[in-house]
Length: 224
Length: 387
Image 1 (cartoon, rainbow over the protein chains, first blue to last red):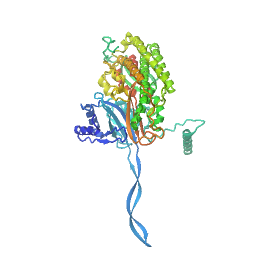
Image 2: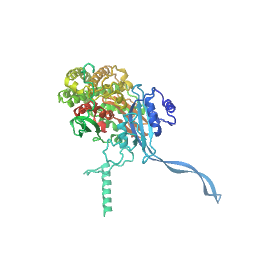
Image 3: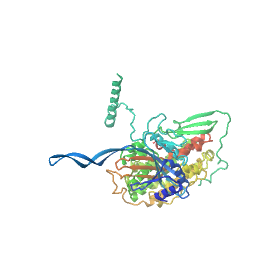
Image 4: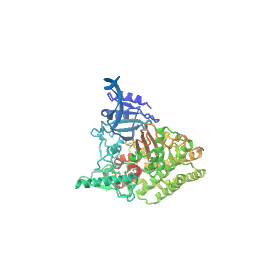
């Protein structure tokens, strides 16, 4: 079995401008993955499937992962003029201070594909694709025309994560019902307020009950 | 007995769709409350006369977002939840999850625990295959008798599980780095006694079913799945091997200690319902062979790695995909760790969910009555399809 670096080189030789990056896996499993550019992903997938040496005919697992916006607080060195009293005289002095600065790293939705070969009996080769953001640019190319096994699994990711697969033959919700609005596997998913009365509420149920009663009172207040 | 020895001539052709001309199409919703669907499962079927022209599986009635539950609790706390995925084979679910976490943290498993895993895993396979064949025959209309033969044997195996793990079906037996409790010598003797009786059961079952004329007429040439489609659709397990593709993860990945045992991978040649039925019976016999070898060779020793971390279990950041050959096909777990006590992402790759992808392709052109058989031969459990 080729290493990830060799597979990357083979892809770049076969699909010019594919722009594949290697994502290192620091864990002991060491299953490193290849990050594909969505524009070239289908060509790369076809190459991986049809290449005589790789022959990755079996797409085993398709998964979505949600990476929300990350707020990072970091210390930045800033040079600025500070008024200071030196030797009894007030002066403007240049000084370098560390200032905390907040920066938001935009989140994205990620789709992970685990490929094996049924004829060569090797694997896994892990592919990843990332959407531009988590709100409006969530399109990724579908792998269903290349491997049929992506059909239901991509529908599941569409249903639970909200990734829209372009080129999928039948993109509908699969586990949730039609007409359901949100995507439950997203990390910022809020459960609907479907509190049922319980006589001895405690812990999480008590918190849910309190929130529910507060919301009811608020609605009543707004109605009057 | 091989699959091809008992094949009738002239049955191996899938029917073509007959055009009834201007006839009306009829839409039928089979399920969710239908005894043949093995749970709460629906098929939206479009019929032309008796023939299927379109079939869309509809599921999710049992959906409880198992994966989200897994993200909200510690690694170990998900172990009893995995029992509820494929509730027929809880021990292989435990094994797949333990294997994935062991890959994630680089944990070794002691020798005796590996043998115990093989023993309980293969017992699970025996009872699953016996049961799925029994249910298939039940779907065919042979009410009771063959199913009760299978249940009788399954009951003996469930009794073994109960005396080892404390529970008949929700076993919760494996841990990261071994097994929860050790087996006593008396338990192993009991397993030897049950395993010694299994070949007799297999003989009896095969004599009863394999050459039954009605069974052959109903199943041969029905629901053919070509090998190329099976590979492309990611079909795994007995269904894939019935289509003639030699792919058994026990042989490919050599996970656990499977390379020490001498066993064969039975292959079908037609890929129809009959081949799937036969493959399960033949695999049952191979499992008995593995069990005999494992029971002969099992060493003494600890069942938990003493260095395994139990409290404050926090894997280093990273990810791992671990998979095993569960009785229904490839069962995989994909875990991403961000260094905390809960997995950042916990994904189950259920075999019967993916195997259902080709249900429509297998059913097109067949009669409504055959859909029940074809679904029965896929061997689904809704606990893991819906998750």
